[in-house]
Image (cartoon, rainbow, N blue to C red; front, side, top):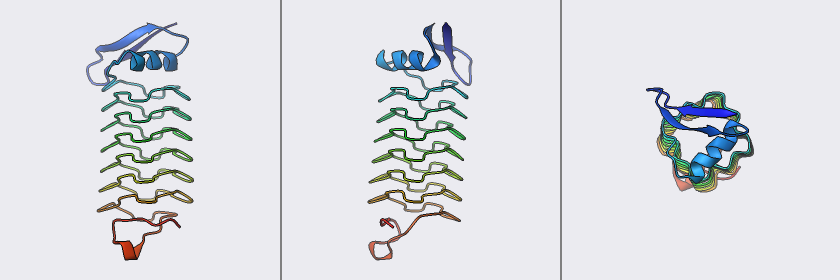
Length: 181
């Protein structure tokens, strides 16, 4: 089957080719070192995609299924990933600065050392998530659920934390650190 990945703003072709599914085409593009910046991947079925180090700045992944995906060290800066399924995804060391993850499911995801500076996590589900040494400086966390999340060493300076569930701040370590609990 033929697939064509286009720019979300200009509709110009980014990458195209024969593949069994869009996931396979994305994996090939990443292996070939193709930048998928600004790619329109709305509602894409990408469960289990192997896209470590992918270049997805400003990509449109609204409603995409990325369950179990390997996006370790991927660049997703300013990407729109709202209402996406990232359950069990590996986002170790990913750059998610200013990414929109509004109401996304990140249950059991690995966000260790991820950069979530100014990310929109409003209403996101992060239960049993690993956020060890992640940077959530200035992130929007209103109504997010961090129940049983491991946030050891996470940075929360200036993060908006209204009505957050499962978040325990370590008073003695300062207002920017999080303790397990």
